[in-house]
Amino acid sequence: MRHDRLSLLVVLLFGVLLIGASLLNIYFISTSREELTKTILLNPSSVKKYDHLIIGILPQPSDPFIANLYKGIQSTAEKYHQALQFFTYDMGSTVSTVPLSPEAYRYFEIALRVKPEGIIMFFPAGMNIGDFINQARAKDIPFVGVAMDVPPLPEARFITSDSASHGKAATIQALQTLGTHARLGIILPSRSSEIIQEDPFLRGALEAIQETGYGRIIATEREEENILAGEGAASRLLQDHPEINAILCTSARSTIGAAQVLIDRGLVGKILIIGADENEEITRLLEKGVVAVTLVRDAFRMGTLAIETLTSIKKGTYQGEILRVTTNIKRHGN
Image 1 (cartoon, one colour):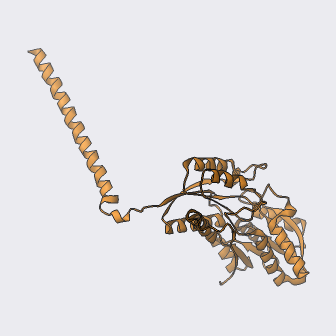
Image 2 (cartoon, helix red, strand yellow):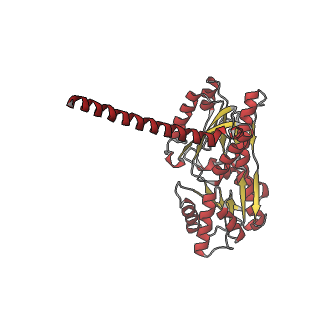
């Protein structure tokens, strides 16, 4: 009798557990279906269909130039119904003997294994990209390189903003304002792969001086890879060369840093700043007259051209040219 009661108790206990588990399972299924209905079943037209997968290997968007490059790629990929996967790396992780982050190399290897319908990759100035193009070609993956300058051995499938033209245009702006009295200091980007005399921005600046026949470049400084790099470079220029009356910048960071040095030293209006790129802070500096003009490299257009080039490669209509975007001059009020 006692044994029968114990057996009945065990059966009842298992029954309760089974009912509880079933109810819990029903709850989870109901919840999952509800969420699925919210996102897809009630509105299937909102589900986007993508024709191709594009992988972008770019630095983290900490700079306005890179941020606008992202926006151009994203906007145009959406237009062509292409899915995007970005692999981002820290520019600061680049070591002195290697001009490209080890992370970027690793992401490129991953992209080759994934075999997407296209790869877009950003490169530091002065880097030979031929090996990347050949590896992608061997896997039959369309590849487009993006950089501020044409690589040493020009390759097709490349989008650039051309720093030499940027340097020339920036110098012309300074010479038009200061004339024969122009004494220029230049903050060059941090690059481990180039001798400073071979920097394309500097070459463009020298070309402008040779063509006009007046003005002088007094000194150059490299911008280091840290948040106060622009301030440090501008301070060194003015400390070592007090005759400088114009500072030419090559990035948003160096523009903001140089402007802060002028503000701190009470030199606003006495020293001309020719800036580079744009963001809210640079716009504010333009409005206050701390920065005279800024030359904006059309990174959004570069991103657009990168996607359009991949599309034309896929269609077999690509002409094989290197594409260069223009630099736009922005002043206060325009």
